[in-house]
Length: 262
Image 1 (tube, rainbow, N blue to C red):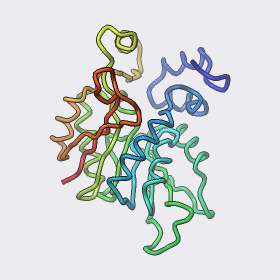
Image 2 (cartoon, rainbow, N blue to C red):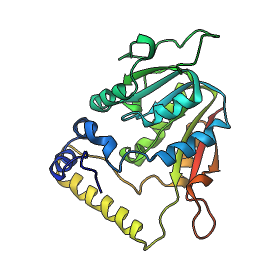
Image 3 (tube, one colour):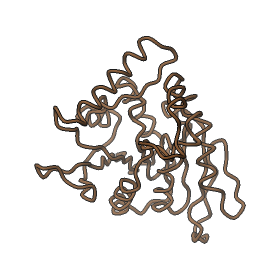
């Protein structure tokens, strides 16, 4: 399942017995060589769909990890892009993947101002990195677009509304919060039993071991997500990600959730 550059079984075991933050600090140097990184085809499909909703000046990658979502935002935003994560190790890898352009330093704290209106944009938007917990984002309403890839399993259902409210508070009126969500696997399929087994093993691990490592695949159900987004003040719609294919019944394999701050 992993490349030769990826983590060993021992390294994964150590990560799994760590806290979320420390576990990702350990995994960060090899994260992009694991299946956990969002595939390029998903990133490209989201980029193509979100581009139709623009234009955008400023973008926020929530739980940015090694920066895959920042790469998407750099293709969509004209002035400034910010990646936020609570793992120092993941942010270090992201900074290395997106070095400052033209000698502009990457900020450790809250992002600075983007280039002045009319400034050359051939080098792409300014990129900044912020270490912070997504459950307490340190931003005023400053962004036109926020997105996230592959992070929601790290939040318990009771935390989800608070997370969405933090993103809502970081967006300007009319700003969009977007993320892909896959269709659930058919009951009884191999994927169904794999995810069920993983979540069950994680619950046993967290019952017996501290610190907890929160990562569940079956707690981010679409109906509950839409309800929490609406409670947080978003108007929500779904857009099919047709580039990712369709299921045998003709429904899309994945949809893009588009939540707009009213």
